[in-house]
Amino acid sequence: MKNSPLYKGSLNTIIMKLLEENGRMYGYEITQKVKLITNGELSITEGALYPALHKLEAEGLLDVEVERVDNRMRKYYKLTENGEKETVNRLAELEEFIRNMQTLVNNKPNPDLQF
Amino acid sequence: MKNSPLYKGSLNTIIMKLLEENGRMYGYEITQKVKLITNGELSITEGALYPALHKLEAEGLLDVEVERVDNRMRKYYKLTENGEKETVNRLAELEEFIRNMQTLVNNKPNPDLQF
DNA sequence: ATATATACATAATTTTCTTATGCATAATAA
DNA sequence: TTATTATGCATAAGAAAATTATGTATATAT
Image 1 (cartoon, protein in one colour):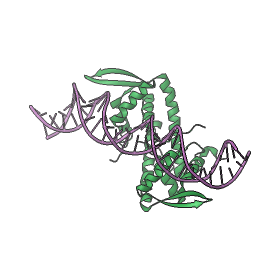
Image 2 (tube, chains in turn brown, orange, purple, cyan; image 1 turned 120 degrees about the vertical axis):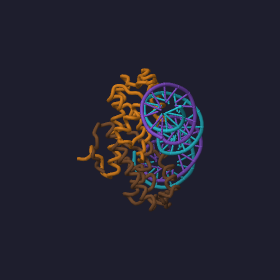
Image 3 (cartoon, protein in one colour; image 1 turned 45 degrees about the horizontal axis):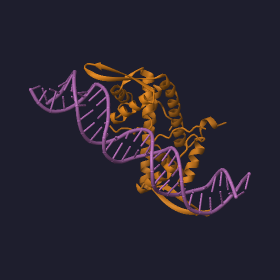
Image 4 (spheres, helix red, strand yellow; image 1 turned 120 degrees about the horizontal axis):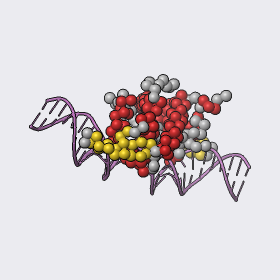
C-alpha cells in the first residue's frame, strides 16, 4: 500500500479538526483514526505528530490532561477556546487551498466542494 | 488580499501540471498564470519557483531552452518524456490527498470502501 | 521467547518553503 | 527627466515542517 504524501502544513489542521469532532484524543489514537478514516492511505508518523502536538499546546491552542490507562500513559489533548476559533480559520484556509488546487488542476473555474 | 497558504510539496505538481497544459512556459509566466487562475489567492514566490525549476530540470523531468525576447532573457521549460509520466503520478497523488482531506474534514468513511 | 501493539519522546537530517537581496532591461507615471 | 513599476532571472540565509532513526516502557498474542 503506497501512502499518499501528506502535504506539509496540513497536519496541524488534521489534528485540530479531529479534536473538534471528538472532544479529546490522545496521540496514538489520532494516528489510528487517520489510518482508519483514509483506509491507510494517510499515515501520521510519530516524529511529526508529537512535536506538532507540543507546539500547538505551547501556542495555547490545545490543553493536555495526562492519564494512566491499563498502566500505560496517555496524554489527552483537547482544543482550548482559542483553539476552537483557530480551527475554523484553518479549515477555511484548507478549503481555499483545495479549491485553488482543483482550479489549477482540473480546469474548472469554481468547483463545488462537499465540505 | 490575504493569500491562501501554499501547502509545502504542492508547488512541483502545480508547475508540472501547467507545463503539461501549456507545452512550454518560462518562470515569470508561471507566477502570473497562477495568480490569474486563482484570482490572486495563490502567489508563487520567486525564491521558491526558480530553485524548484532547477531541481526538476536536474531530475530530468524538465528541459530548458534559453531565448532572448525584447532584449530580456527567458528560460522556457517543458516536460521531458519522463516528466510527462511523472506528472500523471503527481496529479494522482494530489487527487488522493484532496480526497483524503475531504474525508477527514467530513468525518465520513472513504467512498471506495463503502458497500 | 518473540513479535506485535500500545504509548510517549527526541535527535539528526532533509525538504521545501519565506524573506531578503541582487542584477538587468523596458515601460510608464510623476 | 527621474522615479517607479513591470519584466525576468538568480541565490543566500533562515524557518517550518516533515522523515528517519532511535529510545523507553508495558501489554498481549503466537
